[in-house]
Image (tube, rainbow, N blue to C red; front, top):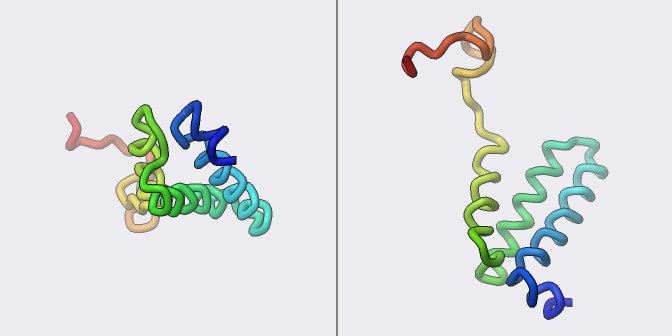
Length: 94
């Protein structure tokens, strides 16, 4: 199992298959897609800690970026603290 998937993409395919199975399983068990995405990223992080890498071609970077953004709270884009929606113009960018 490890050798066949390690040969072509350097382990990135193996990490993705394991993470996809984890994400789908958690999403179906909890009926929550966001929990599935977070389980996918957690599986990638745990795989990287076990194996030392995820694969070649910059695969480490793109899979380390997701976990920090999946639960981030951006109060300037939503309604909780301010009575304006996400389409309110951002004057700081002009």
